[in-house]
Image 1 (cartoon, rainbow over the protein chains, first blue to last red):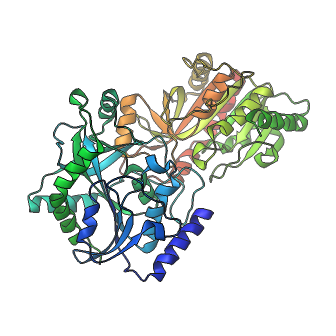
Image 2 (cartoon, one colour):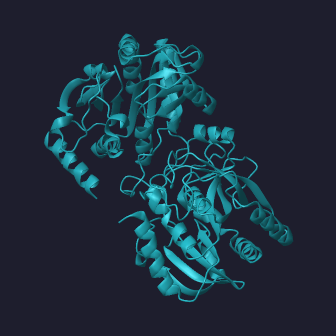
Length: 275
Length: 273
């Protein structure tokens, strides 16, 4: 299985670089890559230097694996996300998540910028992801199963860890930050949804809509990582009042939300039960 | 090799093996139905690997053998074990076994599976007769060039599951004093099980059970103007409907319970169809 071989090569490469052993992995979403700046004792490894690591092309997404400390915990952050709409193959989504698993992470924190379908999810709001709907149109685990990562049919009854969710809500309350809860609707993109498609997603039970996260979270659940997901709402995706949207607007809101976001994430990480 | 060639070579190979034996009913034995082969007077067993073009299976609980034989004097061809989309097979290659059956002269296809209950009144171990399906896989086995020998470019699916067979199965169940459910099967690619939010959505959509098979075969059969009968054994309650996480082991265990009754129901259905 060449994927396993490639992962091994990337893993061995990183071992030789003598980087700290992370317990927490972070995937930083659009406009949120700056979170990597709060990592202390940081060493940054460009994706292009890591054997077989998929490359990023989206504006607002750098391409570095950043190792170091947040709130005293050892982390590795993907500064720059690998999207399905860029790569059109799920192997590229699996690769970074499985590599971080091999590096020893126990928890994966996924962040994203997304549209709010529910009316109370205004631009700038933060939402704890409780569950998701897979409308991506495919599944990252289709194909031969690699049992060294997990079972053929992974359970998804708690895709986002309840205990980590409680920690996040508690932390937000202590900091006086509004943290909503909801269901993330994952689509492939790259086009923004039509009004009727948004109505359908809302009917299906989605509170937000975005182009990432779902495949990563399926891969993370498969290899038994506890997942915490936090969305930054960057635009209103309400069918009745939909206005044209650009990526620049999304980034702008994400940038404005950064201070609140950084404060929350670093406080949550501080409370995590890992070194 | 083109799809057409794969089907033709597989068909040619099987004709040589089967000789004068002419099956009239095909049956696909899904998770938990493999034991039905005990009810077949088997005349020949052919490993999938021997059949040119035939998709192979890799999942525990799914052997890969084609069994030709008799059930209550009816000639049948049974697939013990099935290839699935989540294993990495293309939808087109999943159409091959059904199309080979059609070319061998089979007019009726019985499709069985184990699936998770979305309808909260269903219980593990119960049987459900499939009345319709929902395809949530975003793909289907008829994409690509149409094989017009089998059916039209745009096949009607206003009734995929034959009402006459459904009613015959109900009569059999009544005669056996067996409680069967009726419902809609929702197909997802898998292989990850559904999340609770997805299960709530599927319920709203009108699904009674959710599974990772059956639709590709049912659509291929309908396209080829075969009569289709679908039977689900409920293996578990879908996520959010019970407190327990899901494992494939549970699925296999639940379907083991009702072995003999299920087998005799299927056998009687075959004789009534």
